[in-house]
Image (tube, rainbow, N blue to C red):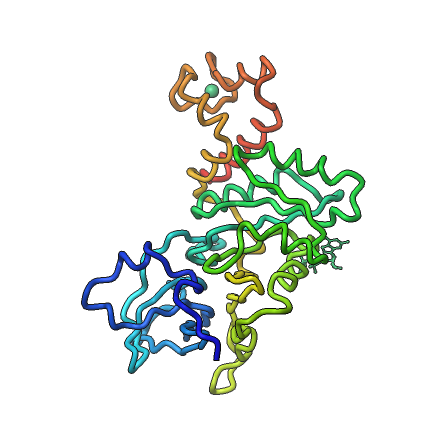
Length: 317
Ligand SMILES: Nc1nc2c(ncn2[C@@H]2O[C@H](COP(=O)(O)OP(=O)(O)OP(=O)(O)O)[C@@H](O)[C@H]2O)c(=O)[nH]1
Ligand SMILES: [Zn+2]
């Protein structure tokens, strides 16, 4: 069996620092599957079933979480604090759904074609910012676009310092282009609309030449008693090292509570706001508005302000 160091699974000083002396002998497992009534985690390239206390709610765990377990009984000791957390608000009165934990980089996938939509990318960016992950815009179907760089230029305006990559998701070059964010110990997740090439990309990143066993690819669709389980498994080893999380839960997003995510996304508006005459200025009708002044003078894109207003209103709803 291939030995898989904790570091290759994403363990680092952030998690190490959380351990008490008394916890040194416990096993550290990385959650690779969250089912309704059970959790599994990886250690040393092996998947273990975690023993949960009675009435434990697995909804409080996410794929990518680090937990400590008793090496003999596999009983859960505790979950470690997360570095990042992707979550989507529940619909209606349902509680927030945890999507993935400790994701370093979020690949936001869109295609270089008529489906390309800046407002949609902004939503995903706000989602990434809010989770604390580093967003990268991945533009697929560059091979069939007339001018892929034009799409890339537009995407790059959405947020300061934003990385934008154009690829053919079906080619091996895609893996090379994304290598800066992958590699041993890294964890990435992938979002984007239907048909943009997410599955193609995941298959490409995971495919061929992997020295690591794809043990997470074989989780049973039913539990030991033969009942159907809702499978939320989604931690796949990438061929070049690192892990990709690809979950259905992240595919349809609703925006709420995105205050911080929006501040980073619309930094140019955030920075102007203190210069508005009114502290709670909505940059809509108020006199002395520095944001509308910037639009009037041509230094701020009016479409940006319109989209900011829409997301801002939604995030308050
Ligand atoms: N030419 C070209 N075709 C691509 C590229 N990326 C994806 N495709 C094709 O586009 C189609 C959709 O790709 P998928 O990977 O299934 O898209 P998806 O995002 O996983 O879609 P859902 O499963 O509906 O969410 C497939 O036929 C792919 O082969 C690309 O970069 N270039
Ligand atoms: Zn204002």
